[in-house]
Amino acid sequence: RPVFPRFSCPTLLPGQLTSGRPDEGATPYLATQPNTRVRCIRHTPHPTPHARRGVAIIAGGLVLLSIGMLVSCNKDPLNEPSVPGNATSTQSVHQLVQAFVAQAQGGTAKSMETMSVDSAVWYVEAGLNYSLAKAWVEHNEETVDSPTVVVPCPDGMITDAAASDAFNTLYAQLAAVEHDGVQHLALVDVVARTTGDNMEFITRYTIGSNYEKVLDTNYPSWISLNWWTQAGDCSCSSVPSTVCAEKKIQHRVRSAIMLPMQPGEYFTNVETWSVDWGIQTSIPDKCIDAFSFGNPQNVPGHSNMDYPIYLCGDYDCSPCLDASDLSFHTQGVYDVLSHIRNNYCPSKQAVTLTVDGDLAIGQGSTFLHFCSFTFGVKTSSNQ
Image (cartoon, rainbow, N blue to C red; front, side, top):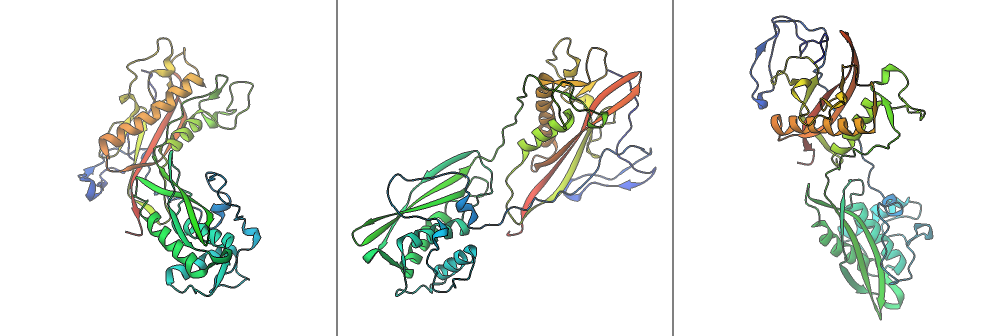
């Protein structure tokens, strides 16, 4: 393997005492050598704020749903739905929905006040999406179901109390859909069908599940990227690129490990592992020499694929990564991340990672990538 200057990890002064976290069972140790290069950096990620719930999820939902030709009602909020008894006409759309939900759940709806079928459908649908649906949670699979509620509808009008009853009945059914980490309510679509003096609220709702991301290792055949952003022009071909190979790989793996986060969730027990070339492997320090990960099925004559994390120290390899290189090392970085999690912190989730480039000057030039992987325990403020 190529010879080039690397440094031990972590950065501590001689004789400085440190220890791992009590919950991780780490034992104290003494650092006897200083280190001028920092690779084991601990940082605390902040959960990305999600869009707050609102009626906008109805107008711009994840999925377009329809149920045949059951009804002619129009749920466009521009048609100015009737105002619930505890609201005023000057309130915003979101405030109107909040007022309807509060009225329904508070049992204050009046049996003497009426609204049109269109308005009743609009309010029930908006109220369910506002109260229960989590349209922001990414998922891979969907299933649908269609419960029905019947309420009186004499003369084509519905009382506020009847609309509230329909909302509360459907709310009780849909609230049972969610199972944390398994499935969630993604979207609700309500339509109406009148039969004589009754009206059916036909509710089609979408259940989202399967939160695992699929790693995308497919790259176009024409792609060729410089190994390191700081080395200059990212493109090694005539096709311009503002992203070099190390960040392209980082973005792909990051997309694959992202898990849905809900408002109020955050991470505890965060730890970061460093994988670098030529360092001394130290599990208590969470540092691993990248040479520890070899490629037993190496492609002959293609030294870019000697290791899952990119290293080019021979004369027959290139600082430019083509489609096959990018595909191999994208999968390789993901595999190293998975190995660390499965073997050293299986109770934690992968949170984020960085893939950085470097150039080592020794007996010739060596082009390389090194990585850090961060894991944590997802915690909710509602617990």
